[in-house]
Length: 470
Ligand code: 5AD
Ligand code: SF4
Image 1: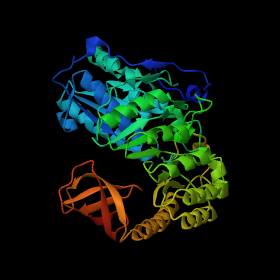
Image 2: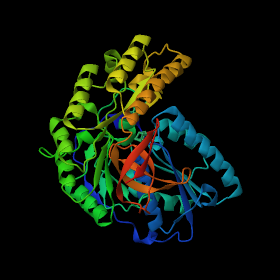
Image 3: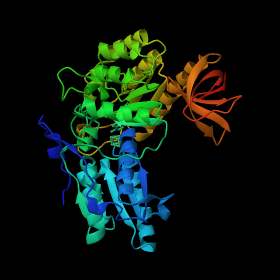
Image 4: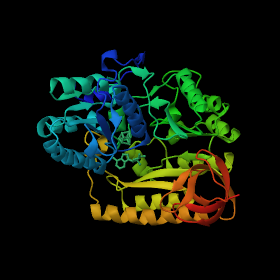
């Protein structure tokens, strides 16, 4: 049994990790034919992509996907720790699964993802959730087949969570959820240690994949007809720093953009690591989408310092305006936290000022949630939840007004849309523009999923736009 430990997760050296090739133990191949699995995924794109890998591992073992958890022999929760509500949702689901187990004695229940890396979660499972068959961490999903197999065969709870990232596995299989858009991991982990954030503890230190491995994966996706590739990492801008002296995100983006792929995106970017050469490459290649997610978190220098964000409001704004100048038509989205411990009304007003200045195209807004083991969880917090909720509402009113205002500017213009399908609700085609806006539209001719078409925008809403293809 391996249980997670934050002390160990925090002390990391820049040692070289091995890059290993994954091989499935032959005895497990198709061993569970006829059994069905269901994965419930919480959290970010990283988790969604991990679920695509886990699905493929299970399918190699013979499992087939069930349409819902009631029809599954194996239910796996791929969890998120970022805020308390994600954590509570996963525990709520475990409660429902406990009832299901009472009816279905052979049901196998597993937990993986970020919560598996939290010592307190694992302790709780060991103490109060004995019916959970196995727990596996984010650093060793390649061990899932053997851990699952031994949980089934030995009928004993298996906890296999490594506190520190181990070897970096290549050649893991993947079953992609979408046939035209694909995620490609380029860097794992995060070294920034923002004081509120649990990710460096749950995902480990920054480890870049080798450029050859990434470029090979991209080539295969292009051959398979994928139209859009999103490069993923907790902080993609740090790509290469741990591994290469002279190869970084700008080089990688350029190498990918030169290939025959219509759309390249990347996320998420920490403002600290953004270089001019990255902006130049994004501006130069039309197939790198002009859409950047640049979390600001707060507009108050005092709060930014407490958050350990390593930039000031002024340097953020400088970068923001440089992006707008260098990349014509770029859409910038952001993340903002309200109610960080010690955030006063004046600090919050500075955040509102920054939003008025930036007029973001999209923004994800959150109330601070104390995560056990992070430095911010120890700070004293005198602002009531009621006041935080009120701040969030005021912030949302402002950010939403700019989404609509920005969308209104597109009325009457023509945008390129990657067709994703027909929306059930609207009986219209839908897809995303280059700047990542959801477009619902009519078309005089039948369209294929994966086509890129020109759409004239007829009306703007806060969260989407309507149009007609031309
Ligand atoms: N509380 C609230 N929001 C958080 N985020 C990260 N950690 C926390 C936390 N403890 C937000 C940040 C980050 C996004 C993915 O989630 O805004 O950019
Ligand atoms: Fe949640 Fe962060 Fe883990 Fe993604 S990396 S699943 S956002 S805690």
